[in-house]
Image (cartoon, rainbow, N blue to C red; front, side, top):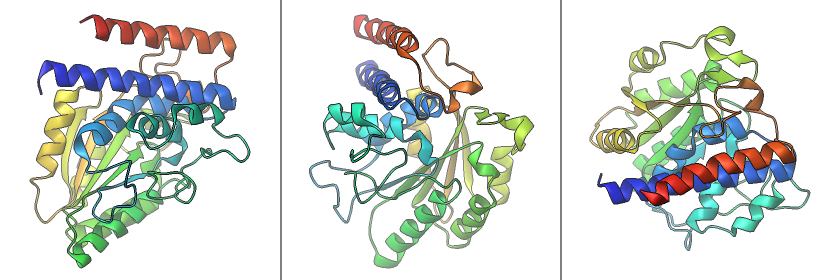
Amino acid sequence: MDKLEKKALQITACKVRMGAVTGVFNAKSGHPGGSLSAADLFTYLYFKEMNVDPKNPKDENRDRFVLSKGHCAPGLYATLALKGYFPMEELKKLRHIGAMLQGHPDMKGTPGIDMSTGSLGQGVSAACGMALAAKLDGKPYRVYSVLGDGEIEEGQVWEAAMFAAHHKLDNLCLVIDSNGLQIDGPVCEVGGPEPIDEKFRAFGFDVQVINGHDFDEIEDAFAHAKTVKCKPSAIIAKTIKGKDVSFMENQVKWHGSAPNAEQYETAMQDLNRVLSGLEAE
């Protein structure tokens, strides 16, 4: 990846983080930590990897995306808004009664959402169904799903993994946002899903472990996944919960808390410093 392309993606990811924080602040509730950790992944998927068109969001040949960790919708919504699916102003109405953007993705009410999610562990099953449908229909599209490392404590994830491997769904790519924290504390203390990479390999996946904030590694991982035949792919992306907001980074309380006005100002100052530094390079 050349420097200009990487810089553009980094700038977009910073704006995704700003949009996510703005949405949660205006909602006075929501999940900023995991939205910030996954921002680079969302950015690469929508601005480089996936075949999608906001002007034709129901194109039957589009790539599909399922946010299995549906509570991190603020990050996805900010990405969709920047991509042009709906105005950025909608982010300020997050979780308001009657607004387009609710606390979890709604495929019936929000352009660009391919699956309604929220109950952890279930989104990945829907992604498997989409991938199998593409195979049966002879369609070219690929299916991507982002899961949390806490989410994979759910048994349904592993039922879906068995299904995906059994049906040789090489058009399916799972991305595990491995930020190490979940609502009740460190993932290693709550449910202990490690070693995540070895588990997915045992379930028949091609597995890669990457830095989920390094666009070169992200690009290489998705490029490799598209070369894999006869088995599904899993990308374990090591990330930082609350990335680029000083008081949120690696702090479990920001899994599901909204900043107050003073904290919001600090967060936006942090993110604006990141943005200014990128733009000055």
